[in-house]
Amino acid sequence: MPASKSAPQNATPSKLRALGGDLHWCAVRLARGLGSIEERVVRKHQLSLRGYVVLTAIAEQPMASQLEIARMGAFDKSVLVGLLDELEKSGLVVRTPDPSDRRAKLLRLTDKGEKVLAAATVAVIDIENALLASIPANSRDAFLAALRQVANSDFAATFSADTCS
Image (cartoon, rainbow, N blue to C red; front, top):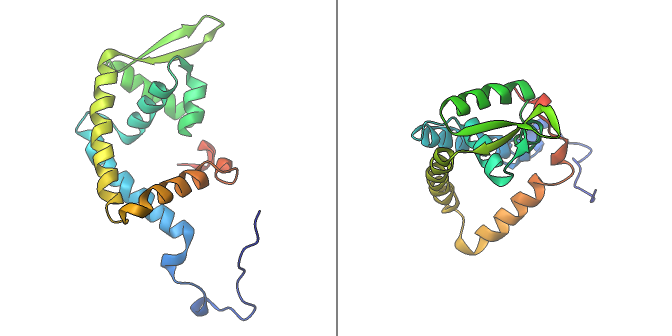
């Protein structure tokens, strides 16, 4: 891990950085704000934000197992089963037995699921573009590249569904 700045020896809470300089605070604030807005947007397509994430993961990896989708979306398996029940009942997802392991289920989107996901994705992209509009155009690609790099780092990979509520 690269060297980092450490707090000065005589640091007191009032001499440390402002809250807006704390990476966790910034990331959580962004995630909660964006999540709240995106939740409202995908609801217009009869999806929850978690349902949208599941559909996106299945579209990315068709015929993946439930376990693979749980890992991709950082979902607890028991939470995923309930989400899949809802998505299947809505006609968006089909579960089929895995020919190599009859206990496992493989997932795919239905035609309706593909259409709902496409419409919801357009709406989510519009929200993301509105958020990114606050960043100068010449900095957006670098910001997104850095964000993806951090989100896909080994450090961020320590995140698991077990730590979520």
